[in-house]
Image (tube, rainbow, N blue to C red; front, side, top):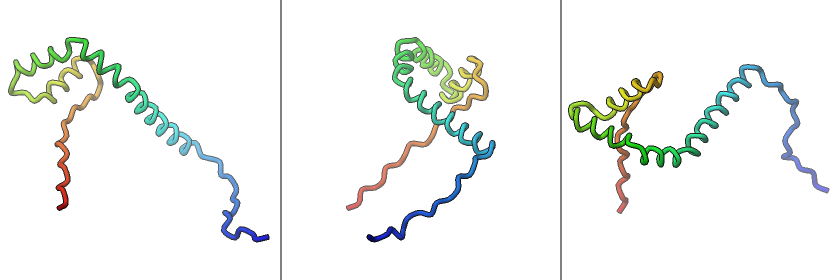
Length: 100
C-alpha cells in the first residue's frame, strides 16, 4: 500500500483571543448589515416611488438651481436628524476601449 506523503501535519488548535473574537464579530455585523440592505432594497424603492419624496426633491432642486443635488440630499439628512450623514457623487466609470 502506498502512503500519502503530502498529507498535512496535524497542529494543535489555538484558542482565539477576545480581540480576535471581537474583530470577527464586527466583520459579521457588517456582512449582516449589507445583507439586510440588499434584502430590503426593492421594498424601499417601491415605498419611495409611491411617496411624494421624489417630486418634493425635484421641486427643491428646481427652486435652488445653484445648489448641487448632493448638498440638498445632505441637508435633508441633517433635517431628518441622521447623524454624520455624508453624500458623495462618484465619477462615472469609463468603459475600456475595444481591442481591434
